Figure 1 (tube, helix red, strand yellow):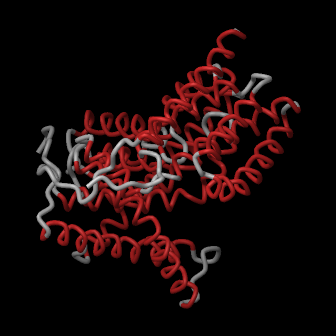
Figure 2 (tube, one colour):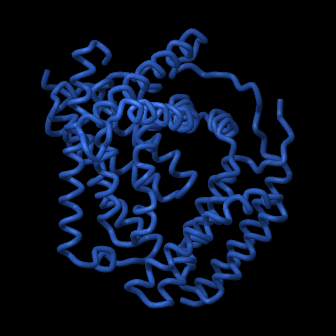
Length: 225
Length: 183
């Protein structure tokens, strides 16, 4: 069943993000760079990315200032501006890539017949980063309770941190693998998908506008060479 | 056995390598600001060498199959692709070069030195792809990227040293777990 959502197709988002980032880095030294950023921001607003833009803005602002500040130490004001522009390119690409839901990406990768071990691995990595962040927090809490300090006994701290972490990694992966195998999952079999990610009219409009804007700035860039 | 071994990966192997990748990315997380702010080539590999080598060497001790490091490289690259697209090529080529080099020397992961080399040189081997990507995407020449040759050499050697140190620590942890019957 094809689900109607407002999200842009994950593969389209990923490819557009890649194009936007590479083009952004190429155009950094152009005088019209601000117009490039503004155009794509407007495009994103048209496609209802305002929440993601707001969410990413503080990070881009702080990171841009840090990058610009660091470049100013041994570079000119122009170099600092380029450093900020590079962060803006990263931010633009980030809006698209962060809009992708991991499960939708995995489903569309499956539809594209990408080997299942790749989509499964990607999903596990994305899901388990959060789980292990929590595990690490617990292990560090236990270390603190036992009075072990990194500065005074680094080797003891290392043992107290890495051994429980590895044991948790082993037990979690054993459990997960057993669970997958008992559900009939294997790396060589073809699976079915509960939900089909289709290429909608909205995706078509987005790709048309996106490519039109990118082609226009590509033309400006090439004309200036 | 001194031969190349290409064995199929089971679900168990894939899951463990994916979990190892998640922990590798978390371990390298605190160094991400250094990697993202530095414009010269070298400090990135230097900063990432220890956490990457430490965690991936544990993974290679558990899944001793040719291609394990490339799988870790693909997984971490795919996740980083969502944040900074260029990083995918960095991770993939780094893991490919490092694993190929280790397996050319030692044939398979039964030899502990193969694990040490493969995991230890991972960060160092990201340097060539970083340079190529910087030339293609940012138009920076090699001389611009290197800056001071002395500091570049020091960072590159430091990346190798820290990588090997990380892999040694990882191997030691794996030894302890093997003794306890956990690995």
